[in-house]
Image (cartoon, rainbow, N blue to C red; front, top):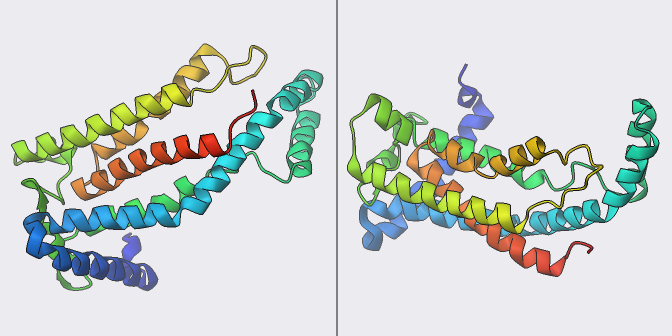
Length: 246
């Protein structure tokens, strides 16, 4: 079943298409075939700017979790043989502090629909019954509607597409590695999530976006690249504003 056959989602997709086409038409006199790519960049920056308050909430939540970590470890020690009591005590701690163990996950949830819309916009040959003009745009010769895995598996092979994807994925990998090193969690010997295997898995998650980008159209990969760079810069700035307890 196509979710965008549902009228409200179809209207949302058509509205997003109208915004991107309008921006692409505005940029076309000086951006040429890359006008739609520039439109994606502008939309990404606008979305990230609108999410700055959410990023601040995320930084505060991270600071709170770090402050509560010693108390959580103490609760885990005292009630490790009683899972039900352990769960109640942990939830009571978060309630007393007016926070949640899931605080800070909102930015990820908010961006999922945006990536989904970009993915759909650059896959369909028609939007709301009219030809999809966005598919005629490219970035340095790489069509915005082409995904790397799809190109390699189905063809036709395009050197510009391979080169542009290689650049974007390289940027994401570098940013992920910087993020992993700068924001590495401090392990605690008695914490249940501090085993070497768990820490390796958490580190690997930083590179998940780069892997995901291999399967989406170039326009969505461009959005993801700008997003991870913005996120790293924002986290560095906010970490200075909301430092973790020493």
